[in-house]
Length: 626
Image (tube, rainbow, N blue to C red):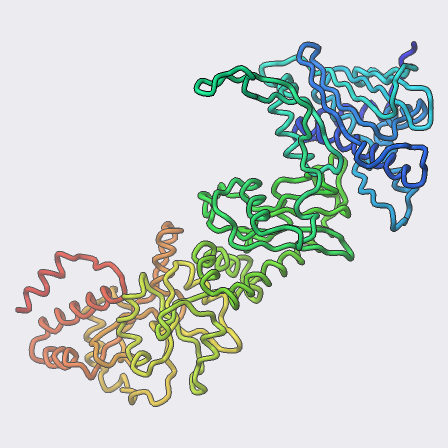
């Protein structure tokens, strides 16, 4: 029996495949099972037109057998099988695929319900990652002679006639010896095999059967002290029909929830379920979930977003980030498409065109579901927003606001007048015609912002202000800039731009006092001016245009080395008795007037939430005025 050599290019490809193409060795079982599924697909399709096949759909199966003593793992199918020429062409020439040829023969037959998987003819050789010897015993349907193909790898292979009663193929893999780095024997363990089948091949359409260990009570065992015994029973290990392939009307919400909790290891039921069935440029089905709570590591660098990607029921990627943008990174689920352009190892994608089409559609579906929740289930949406609202804000900020148009209608902010969370659209709908801008105020908490001196005029007129309490909110306003042609305006730092404002007091009328205060405070203040915001309060501190105090606090934590500071503009209420006292002291007792200026500056800092440079000194300063 002469050994036949692989062609030179096949030798190189085999070596490349064993060492480079596949990221994880465990993938070999997925590939071998997928090939077995393809073989059954072919014979099942043949049976539609050939009554001599004599097999019904329920007769087809894939069988797994592990022999620890012989150190072999066997995958058997009762599919189409191969003859000698096909063994030579499919296994003797790497990257020659009988599946691909079969697909070409089907052409554009619309009635061909066959989602064949292996198109490259290389998946079989992934078994050499864990095997030092492979035997293939096969008998083709319609032929009487069976053949045995054997190979140790790159040295070549042999093909000899043999006996086999039934049609189909047995792949017998002799596993390599264990080393300190690799424990190949784990692929003979029942637990490992069951997990790998569940992970990669759970939705292969044919039953994958294997003898598994079960426990039962012994017949003569007493009830009060029962004894148990182990026994072997052949069991189907895969689900076969994935839940997303079933009609939505045939699946209950409880079944969807259970699938989510089992699949994604979450004890909390999902808040929302989205099913997608699309046909067109790319056909795919998707089952998407909005979780009921964020994972414990969601807002950390350890969290990995992504949807599970399947092709014809075979898992290709566990977390495909290209399917879901970071702004919707909380979404979990699966996408299954037979139209994907897979690379040679069936792990990645050769082209991203299909993925982009699917991702764009999924983005629309997720946004549509969130809009539905916002309109029909406000309480549920606010619960979602509490969990993942920050992610929507980050999505608006990323890439200089590239997704702001997509996300801005989903944002919620606390309203000073409504005393609850509102959308930007709801705010604008309530604006009086005379109001030109959307007012907001940034601060540490709602209670503090409710009493800000700068917003007193707005509160008096019952004008709505959006309260921003997240550190990212101030940056968010800078990115959004406008909403429905209405500019965002800080009620704290910007010009309120109100009609019937109090008469503006020209700074020239109080120039001497303003200059005095500026000189008294020195570098501690950038500007001293007359305020048009204040009514009953004597003083406030603003930052003007540009960086706000909230942004200063944010950068102090995020990038302290930059030392970024907002401008400090001291605004004085010239109608307040405190200003009159300051003016009087300026001429009568300049030293006392300087102390008044320092007190007002520190009070303004406290109101703005800024630290006082010397709290002890400030206490002494106040006491010195008694």
